[in-house]
Image (cartoon, rainbow, N blue to C red; front, top):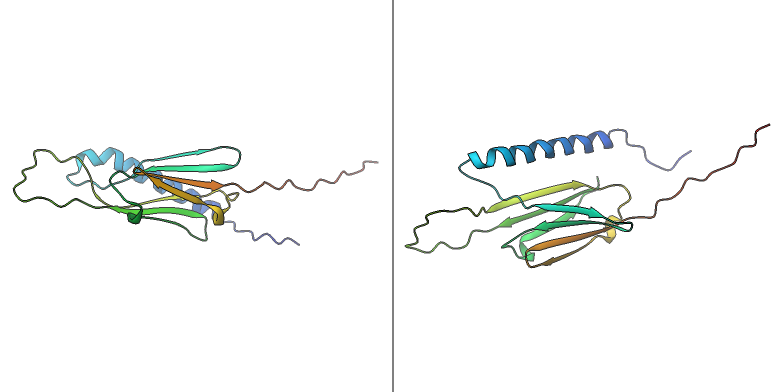
Length: 148
């Protein structure tokens, strides 16, 4: 008897989310220059070492109050926020506008060895840094079988 809850479709759902993210990223990078309106999508770096996974997101022009980080019961970490447009002054005639504004959502499926309750974050100079501690990987018990 095992106490581990087996969920056969969890990996399939995670793979589906990754494929959807891949197509969304492709659409944004390919079609965004052709569109007349763009949405704000922060760029993210993900790295790891032996003890932690690190997520670093560029959020220029935003404050800590504009950002929300959540983790759901399926192990999906979501970064949400809104980059607000500054007040437009009367009489300004823009020649070119390249900065983009608006709401955004970025989601990442966390590996099972992340301690979700110990994740920490720091926001400084428009950069969000999340530290996701890894749990110790338990090695399976090994029993030597005597061969006769």
